[in-house]
Image (cartoon, rainbow, N blue to C red; front, side, top):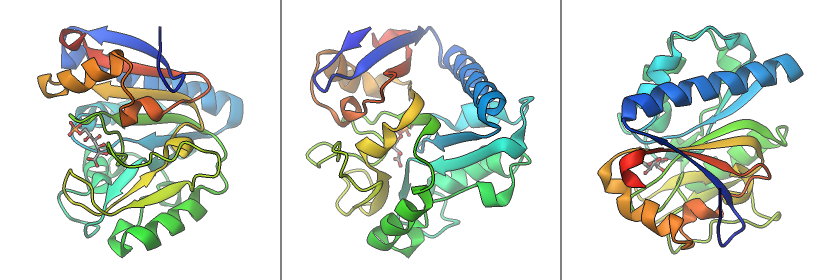
Length: 233
Ligand code: 6PG
């Protein structure tokens, strides 16, 4: 296990293929769900955006789990209309959420279509009742960003950090986004990063060399599990 600058404890789980990684991630997610539901009758999961998780969400459709106990949140969202093809909530809906029996009032998209500041404030209220997530899924950007926490921006690691923050000049389009803060993303029993593709090589190198990329600012008490293609290590 690596300990990095922010004291982030990282466990690296390497898989020869993206398919192998996806299968392992699905099993880990279902294990987390089973444990949460048996202990607390509910599973509070934060979904990652981008493209990496899509196949994992599609594989989850066939899972044998108590969907009625799932409560779904998002780590970030792009400020686009609700049905825009680039919305993270739309990707998750098409890949998984529209196909399984999670009660609609237990799926909590970030209302980013309302604009970054209003949506961030509103989503912080949504999260007020959930002190600890059971599982947070995150991707990794080529520049080391995660959720919509980008280099050169304060990831908001302090306890005073708002749960959700407005991002107004993201280098990855669209420029306006809403992101959970690093502090809020870290308030979770388990956290999995999902990292595939040669484009992530530099970000993985920087991370493992102890550079303070935004992904390294995510510091849950139990550490983080990085599901990564072996070729990137
Ligand atoms: C977003 C995502 C972002 C994503 C990474 C990786 O809204 O863009 O939340 O953080 O996870 O950029 O994206 P890919 O999975 O598409 O490589």
